[in-house]
Length: 341
Image (cartoon, rainbow, N blue to C red):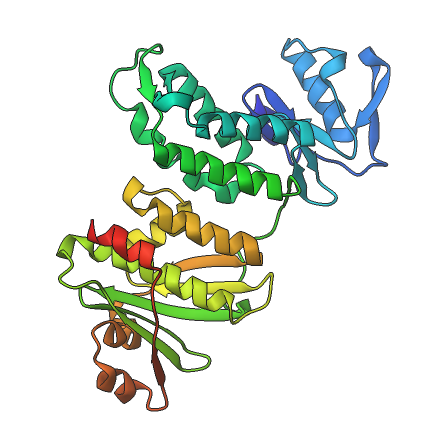
């Protein structure tokens, strides 16, 4: 039906979610829909006429329009380009998150049926339309759903889930409840700060091509080789932490890494539980500074300086750029401790 509307009836800008359709028109472009004796936005009237031709039933009370309309329970304002969650809906969500995060008295253990875990996950996924950066709060929930699909199967709530949900609730409470839609397809040339990162089992390094500032830190003693992905991700977090101190609010920051897995987890905010605290901390920084971040891949052969820094090969880095200023940095202690476990 949506294909017919767009390609055969010329109904532009049509969005369809399940059995709901939405779109936009100029406020002065109205068209009378005779069966309801009401002038609707032009393309909305055309869509109602198509439904009549296809014998699709509809009701007058559901044909809403205006400068702000609710779509799947979220107020959408196309003029200010915002998605808004009402105070009541935010409070309801925070109350639910805190109820899960609360430890039972007298050392008892809390559990919920599988269907309740799934409902909570669905509720949060809906809320991510307004709070997209809070997706890490579900990275520890999904593994809990593995196993039997019996909807009444009881699953225990552990401290990690409590921490994730309380973390999400605190950010929601601190938010205005408004998600300003911004373009994520901005040119790299418009970035305010660019950083290159790399890590190896011996160390981590990042540098700023614009200022030739370089930073190096050793990894924990004798780390297991399988932890290299952890250090690649930790290096990006450290670079973001440093960059946030060197730029203004609402800055655009680009961080390059030659590790594709690191690009993936920071771009999607989805990861295995062992890495989730890195994503949560990165979100804390982004929200506190209103930074627009992009993590991009750079081939290893083009990441020479960062690679040399991570291996403590400072002479190789200086051979590439003689006026580099190299300094040590200290990663967060709690992150290094997690890598050693």
